Image 1 (cartoon, rainbow, N blue to C red):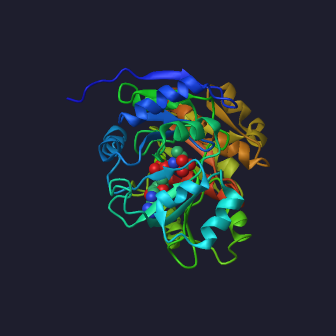
Image 2 (cartoon, rainbow, N blue to C red):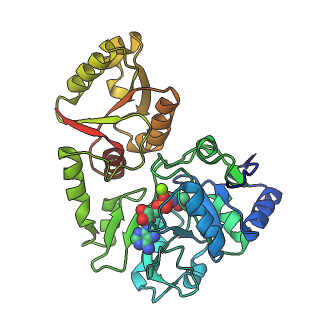
Image 3 (cartoon, rainbow, N blue to C red):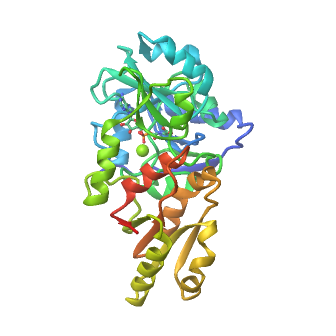
Length: 354
Ligand code: TXA
Ligand code: MG
């Protein structure tokens, strides 16, 4: 049986992190332990990128398949050459525009990066996070830090320290708590090994922003087919980022009415139902809420940044309330909406087109 570790949560000021705390955290990293830390997107579960054993423990702690490669976090652009080789000029152009920030670049792997990090592949994912706590941790550790999102595999990514605690308590040494993350969704993953470059995962930097620098940037081909398949026959295959309760996604012009009818129906069967609602829809559901239906406010549909920021927290809150089902509508697909849609479709067990 795996030894249980005493997991500490330590508050760290987001604007000016306490150096002593970060020095202690970096000693843990150097000793091969795992440290969860905040980024501007979601919390990451970090280890010294050059310590293959520590990297392996990331996979076992998360219960993540070893075939899914990790993102390497660096602190400054000069460190890029320690992680990747044959770096194209475009990478530097993107870095100067978007780093530090929620853009992960796929480049050719440096031979010194252990294969455990890249799941045996020849490419490596890398980004500079836009968060003082993360940057100071990397700097004090003196090495790039490999980190996936700090959740149990397939659960919603953690946007607050207690989410990490709920998933990984007893399994990791330390959680640095700088409060809720700003973006709330993971970084955009852009493959520069393909020509033209291709978005593998929509995220914090929008497709439109990338198009302003790479006019012919592509969206992963399977993205649309996967989405279609999910709509026809949801199944478990692409299920990811998912709460415990089944999540039913509503789209189409009359989604509100379909969602209301479905919620009412489930409530009549004595089920505990939670709706994740955009602010503008809350009044419409008032009657069901008064009758005991639970709801989480995603924020205004006109402020997709708020919806992104609240998304995973709302899922986790409804899970904590032990609901039997979660109902949610699909926001428009522009800007951050694309990433929000991606996460919702992956989390969904059913999609209702109304
Ligand atoms: O915002 C984020 O990206 C957060 C924070 C902690 O940085 N990290 C994160 O890591 O979301 P993770 O492991 O949950 O997701 C990393 C994604 C996965 O979809 C993985 O397949 C992809 O990046 N990825 C990593 N290395 C890759 C590679 N060499 N080639 C293609 N995809 C890669
Ligand atoms: Mg993840």
